[in-house]
Amino acid sequence: MTSLLTRPDHARAAPARPRPLALIATLGGVLAALGPLVVLMAVGIIGWFATDAGVHGAPRDGMRVGALVWLAGHGSGFTVLGARVTIVPLGVTAIAAWSMWRLGHRVGDSVSGHGPDADRISDGERDFTVPTAIGLFFAGYAVVAAVVASLAAGATADPSVPRVMGWTLLMTALVAAPAIAVGSGRAAIWAAFAPATVRAGAAVAGAVLRSFLLVSAVVFLVAFAVSFGEAATMTSRLHPSPSEAVLYALVNAAYLPNAVLFCGSWLLGPGFAVGGATLVSPGAVVLGPLPVFPLLAALPSVGTPAGWVGGLMALPPLLAAVAAFRHLRGRPLPWDQVVLAGCGGGLVAGFGFALLAARSGGAAGPGRMRFVGPFVPDVLVHAVTACGVGALLGAGVVALLNRRAARAWIAGTDADDTRAPAPEAPGMTDPAPTAPEPTED
Image 1 (cartoon, one colour):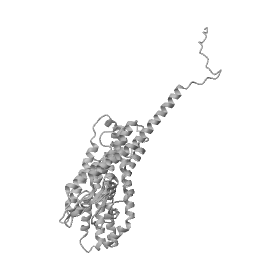
Image 2 (cartoon, one colour):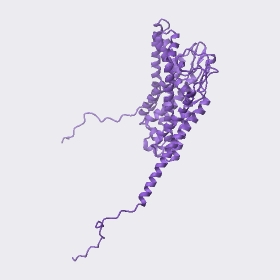
Image 3 (cartoon, one colour):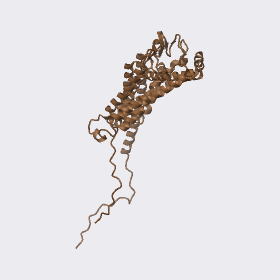
Image 4 (cartoon, helix red, strand yellow):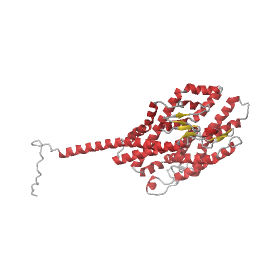
């Protein structure tokens, strides 16, 4: 007797095994470092050929310059004609951070199947998937940075490997770690355990910092647009060719985030220095001889600024108040938690801006140009005060509106409870139930 069942043509496919965590995380860190590095090295080769049509040097010289720029974006610094330059081009740092975020998010998505699931994590089981992935990501990125620093070092340039490692660790903690946590889904699980006040405060902090940086960028761009003619004059003094002018514009663009942070420090009041014994603030401007750098055309004139310029210092607390009001108005929190979230978020935003401002300055040359950047201690005090007080005022308005709405609702509820019932129409009352009559069988 033969069977009528048909044999399948191929065996049932087994479920695919997840890729090793070590391979995914380490490779993600390596690719995150190599992406911007390859682009900058390509720009270096193009610049080497565009300047003198490749007459002097070799393509590796352009590649080396691109590698040095990548290292400078990681805080390495470099030496030019015996002068140490430590100011970090934050534009390059921003590109590296964007690459870290994208690759970190993809790494997190790839390792989401490793470790315990959400139910087991909620039950208290320990999960080391994300910390392990962060450590391996940093290891891959750091190896690339160390190799590039050793290959790019020479007599004319001396990148600092310890500074590169420090910046890599800081960027991994602030950018790659949140990206891996978000991509793996662990961030959503962990956020569910955080109190609502903490989540609201974090949202306020991010909103205040973003709005302040955006307004600082707008103010700087307006000042630069007004002085664009002077910037063009500075560039023409160097007599560059069209290709060299484009490369010089890219160099200036690399320091655009630094200029935005300088402008934010100016809006807060303390201002910044462009060389020793200089001051650029809303109250006074004292300058000395400046290098031929087009971004410096946005600096105000020497002397005492006009009276209305000091009024711009009201922008930081006003922005903080508006951001706190917008992000707390729709949250169902008691009035005291609203105030706490607003004030705490503003303080964190002020501290975050001071941290960014501290990384925006450094030495830009020999002599007096060794002191360029915001006055960090004063910026910290003013930023924390302005953002904290502004966010507290915005949260206070939300708390007041919530209390008024709660009182109005309570008053309306009490009025409904004390209202007399409406009289019933005749004939509409239900008859009283009667017992059924007994029946005989």
